[in-house]
Length: 378
Image (tube, rainbow, N blue to C red; front, top):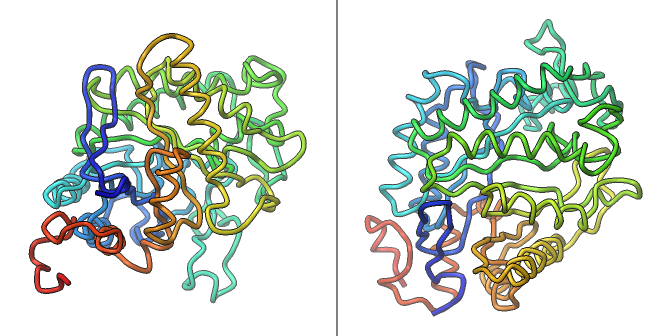
């Protein structure tokens, strides 16, 4: 049996979530809510459902905004009202009916909100960057006014607005439970709002939410605490980090590792390691280019558990140009991560997980593909 297709367990404060394998469908924006109301559509059912039928252990829905102004684009998903909850329920039910777990990435884009989706229908018309108010855009918010993203300047959040924002994350988490999701991933990566608080490149505040490491990480710690308080104790909670800004004076992998250990004490058990997102990308590029970040966080969490004399129940996933079954398997065999998140390769091939299982020699009857596709077995 391969490591990649061994069962996995995600821990929670008073429960566990079992996964049939260690493949995660990474959250990827579809920019497909044409009504601009945040309500998922048949497209989202087909897109996510196909990957569940294709064998993934966990299917994570794209960045889903906790408030309307937190959307990356007007065409993004949301979880700020009951209509969205109702529309998500058949999607999560179908994902789970195919043997996968259903996850959602809760998000707030901050200064990178109110932009045109990076898809051909907008790009072909020359529509890029910030969406003007006349075309459905809005004034964005951030920890500080910044031009780091090359977009319309955001309005700095007041302390009172930060508190309101934390409550919005918790409200969205409650709705995620009502919608049937098994898992929440808090989006703290890619230059969006939480990452904007973490990085000195975008956080120049002089109050308790800026300056030192303690101040810059305060917002995320408050979000995690609020979400964990309402998210069922038997369900795991995760965070996606940009492990490094890849810029001198920016957010670093050392800070990411330290914060991961601190968040583990607040109830986060699943960590996904990406990178960059503030300004132009300056990091490495190539197959598995972010695996070292996952490895660093995994080692920090293991060392902390060993020091405290407790079992290490953290689960770390690697992401970034992991495209082949052998490559994914090697990451796990090397101990650099506990699972892999597949993104672009899964856009090209919905059955990536089922195909990978066969490439790694799994028995036909253990290949995680929909039984309706039995004629396609080798």
